[in-house]
Length: 145
Image 1 (cartoon, rainbow, N blue to C red):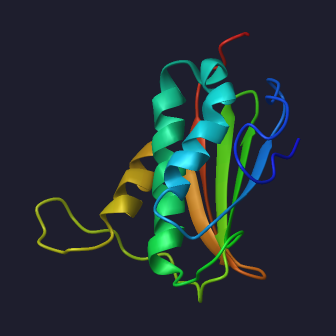
Image 2 (image 1 turned 180 degrees about the horizontal axis):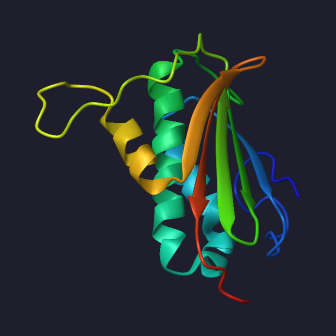
């Protein structure tokens, strides 16, 4: 299933459906991404909040670091399987290599959002293919709906 444009512009996703959403490179996009994911949260059980946090971190990184502007500059994809949710954000930025994460107690000013991603996810990564793709897989125990 695709929801293009503003969240709510179409039927709510069912338990086995995906979300695909184009967002502007704007500080409001993280909120729009969370709103689009709300229909999936009951299935995630206690990890629903973690899904919202992962969506927020990946979209925010795309908005802050891709240095792109305009409508439809960032794409959000969310798919929920039986044991994992996969969140992927694609932007048209220059890309980056997976960095070394800051150590607790360090005075570094950047990279802390990726520490959150690393803690939440079983696996995550970055690749280039027509844009910068940053993805994470969040494990959960499925709650029947």
